[in-house]
Image (cartoon, rainbow over all chains, first blue to last red; front, side):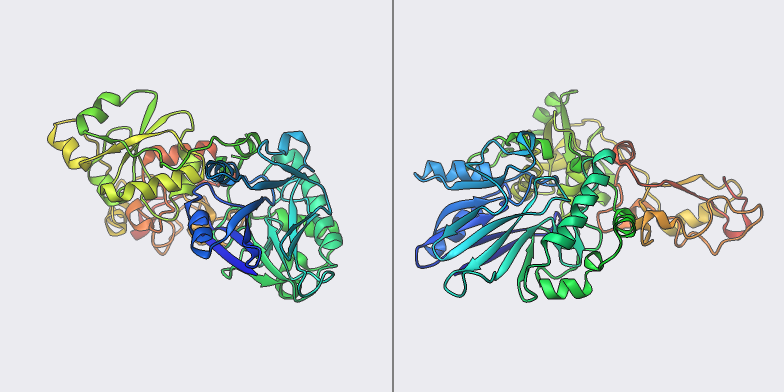
Length: 247
Length: 224
């Protein structure tokens, strides 16, 4: 198992590389557009980047998936880009090779990633739940939670405008209280952002967590009636920068 | 940005854009309505002298956040760095937020610009002490604070200012220590370093609240 977290201060972006050292395959999760570092790490580790996964259509930085795909294609083998198709055509990136539905699975050697639809921050958002098949085929080990679940917070649902935010908040409520519960306490949480990002309002300074820790200390995961939960969530987000808007 | 991602951003390739060096004369010739000079030097250096009409976003981790917020996506950007070695870092910040239209950079910095005799602009900035003195004067200035609530140190902008917007006539405050800061003391790269940038931020941000702060130090009249 190969695992690497790349953190970019300022925009507070966390992207990841995960792969199987035996088959020499590695995937990049939510790459940024400056892709040289992923290429360098893969080269240094003797790995081939065969897959790129996206959790959602980002609002605060440009996806590096198309860039990475083009750069690798120059070298002979383009990776397969997996991106959610659950937001409809409008929110499905044209460079996606695999338009992902809920429950889709992708194996990279003995590492298996399963798409779990977690709308709320955006309609198409998926978290990628990871299984290490050498340990267990049934019990997940970690989750790339994207902008659905952060350390100490959940992703803001108000970036697509006033009309969409109530519906997204409702979807987020369902994602938090219906979709997340089956994950075991010990499953590790690797989000797409750390503290400083405009995508949440209370993101902790640690760059990973566990489901159990978040259930205990993340106030957005505390059971509450939907109305009360939504009001608390929508209050007090930082200014929605123009950069984050849908336009 | 979301739209750019949904439509598929252009592929840049192995070479970073914006590596073209321009002399001061070339930058001067290229200044037009279709381009914008982005000055990434420190806010102090910018205040002392800058190209008229340029926007200052000091190089640091917050650069891409501010750049994505205030810079136009349809204009060619010309960079004024402290030193040429800063340019790749600046460009990397900019392409992460989709600002790919980078023409190049001023190779010899602002000194070359000045030595050519091209026009420069300056910003008047006050230390907090100088501001306090002005506030204590017979005709204190009107202070407009354009920071957001979180920059002011409130928990959220909805919490409101630390004191009422319009104090009762004759009300006294402890001084401008919390409410008023000059751009030079605001720090952390979060305060708008130029008037132009702050006015743009005011135009595009949807929720910052703009509060008035009155100078009432030493019994001076409130400026409401």
